[in-house]
Length: 424
Image 1 (cartoon, rainbow, N blue to C red):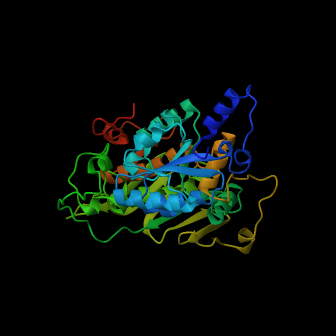
Image 2: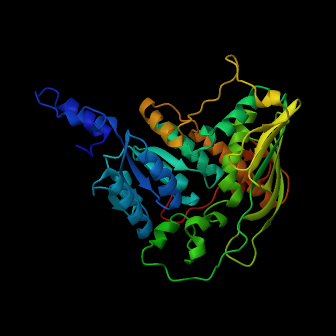
Image 3: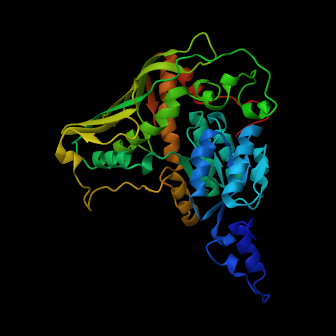
């Protein structure tokens, strides 16, 4: 019974309800199959295991049944972690994610792959009947639109996976700004971390025997293997990601949009300058200076440095310095203020993204970072990259999700997928 999904348990129970039987006590308590949300993990690198898998181990109502990775070393470690945690040897270790999606005893998937796989895997999982928690960000703006349409069509619970909305410092800043404690918001200053100082080695190398290289590439263009192309370093390569702006921007831009009450919309204008890696493998933006303008007049800037965020209003400012840094403000009144019962309360879950997702799988409500909001904050990141690449100010229509009278910019809203992979 321990590997029965909630759906299978209920179906079996109802089908046999006319037949008298004795039900063992172990299927009625906290460990009952009907009470466990069964999960498959796709992508078991460092973040997939040390952050996501360990978080699921702390959830008593979830059970990891399968792990999947194209790197046999990553896969083996994840499988051993699961078996050790549950004290058995029945965790499936799979190399092809489609085997995870085909399993009827799995309710949900946790996707922790490189960015170029995020949307395609999520769409395929939704179509296979799974609820989805997926790491940020999307790879393109048009991909995000397909993801929204698919999630809503199938009634899926989808959590864009970041912890920011559960962290008290970011939640508090957003809530105080929304409630006017700094007056009318005028400016948002976002600082993202600096990137690596080495450009990556482009020299082709033999593919390690433990790695399924073609599957790692998936929908991305064919390319020779090099150790600097895979795992953590994929972030600095345009074919698989959007560089530091997408990697970290998805965190801090979300708090910015949350506080600005534009989390389901976006800016109307973007311009930026930047430099790119030279003489190596990496080709995303290296240095950057980006400015956004919103329809409500708010200006948001983005530069590299110590990851921080600051909100400036007509009656003061609030912000923090450093990732998860303590909240600072222009006055003790702002810093010590309390959100009143009649003021705006922003939904969060202090227990974190994984707990929030599982709660919503049960209630069928949207998590704190639903698909539309995840798409919109990813779009803010993509807009910056497009503006820097084109080297000019761009007008953006957040309702139509198109650039105004700019064919070359609109052509960058999507990217081709390598056959046979496709979204539609």
